[in-house]
Each structure stands twice: as C-alpha cells, then as structure tokens.
Length: 251
Ligand code: ADE
Image 1 (cartoon, rainbow, N blue to C red):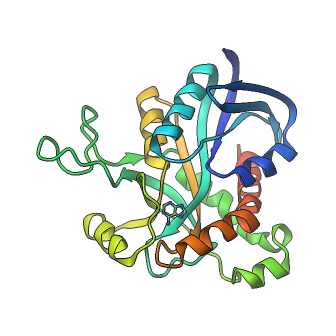
Image 2: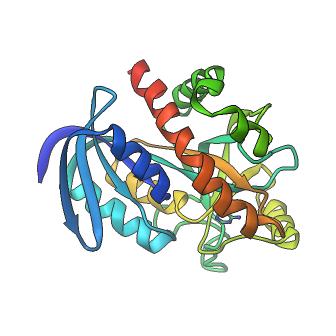
Image 3: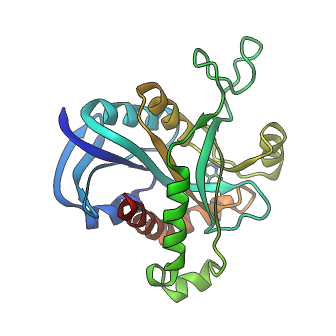
C-alpha cells in the first residue's frame, strides 16, 4: 500500500495514458492483475495513473484495486463518449454531473436503473463546477494545444463544454434507434460510454470523490465506428493533459 495522498487518474484511452506518461515525473510503476499503475508527479501534484480498460467489469476491477492500493484524495476519469443530444458535435466536452448504468434493469424487483442495495439510480459527481471552469480555461487556450490542421480536419472551431448526465453500459452504441430508446428513458442524457457509472459506483461505495470528463468522439449513430477510433487516436489525448493541467493549477 502506497500511503502518500494522491489524485487517481483513470483513463479509458491508451493514447491519453501515453500523453500523460510523457509528462509524469518521479515515475514508479507497479503491474498487478494485467494493469500497470504509474505513480508520480504531474503538474506539481502527486498522482497515480492507470488505463481503466474497457467495459464496466474491467473498469470496476481497476478502480477497486486502485482505491485499495493507493491513498486517493479523489479520482478523475477521462475519456471519450458518443454524443446523444443533437447539438453535440465531435470535440465537444461533457463534464459529468451524474451517471446512470443504462443497461442495469432489475425490475420488477427494483425500478429500472436502480442499483440494488444502494437505493439510487444516478450517482452524482464531485467538483463538476471546478472541472468545467478548468475546461473553459483549456478552451480559451485551445489553439495553443491543438494545431490548425487538426482543428480544420475535425471541425473543432466552436467547441463547447457543459455539465450533464452520462450513461454507461456494456455496449458500443451505433444506431439512432438505440439513441431514441436511451433518450426516452433518460431524456437529459448527454453522452454514452462504457465505464463511468461503474467507476462512480465504486467511488461512491468507498467514499472517494469522483469526477469525469468525456470528449465527444462520435454521435453514437451509423458513423460511430468510423469516427470513434480516428478522433480517439488523433485528438482525444490532447484534451486530457490540457484540462488536467488547468484543473490542477486551480487546486
Ligand atoms: N465511447 C465512445 N463512443 C461510444 C459509443 N458510441 N458507445 C459507447 N461507448 C463509446
């Protein structure tokens, strides 16, 4: 057990981890259960960084191990997501306000989406306002972080950020029929991904403040399988480091 207080950073993207690793100093690396945990200093803060892996089970396991092996003061999740609202475009940012597992349904024993024994469906995040402010700082300086050809290629001229509801489930969503189903159940949902709500539940049960930033990589429709890998590889990694730096500078 590493007892120094640290901020946990969990990312669902290899490219984000690689970008952050380049900036991490005093690195100490531990591999356990097929995950590698990197502790060290990032933008003057003591952190531990790990790739969440994909899906609810994998990310739950990573989170549980992380919380038990390190003395976390908070956990921040970064990654990409499919946009569900019409006005969201690739490159926009959702700071999670609350999260639901959209594939959790133990009805009629419990209402749809309710987490058995916790007696709640949505899990609320910590520090979302502060993270949104950090995102605004990053966006003010966007052109310093992202080069003009990438901005033009991905049409990132008018990137917006807001706090909202994130859905998680063990499915990659790539159909407008599925989007309509999700929105008929949870109309305020902004984006969909495969880990956040599970990680939020683990943090809630261990009483660790949890926050999450998701960048829209696709619109969860027929184009999603094409848009997602391209954005993830070429752009997403540039966002995480920029937003985290602004966030840490505020602490
Ligand atoms: N992560 C990024 N895009 C996604 C999508 N369309 N569905 C689920 N997870 C995602």
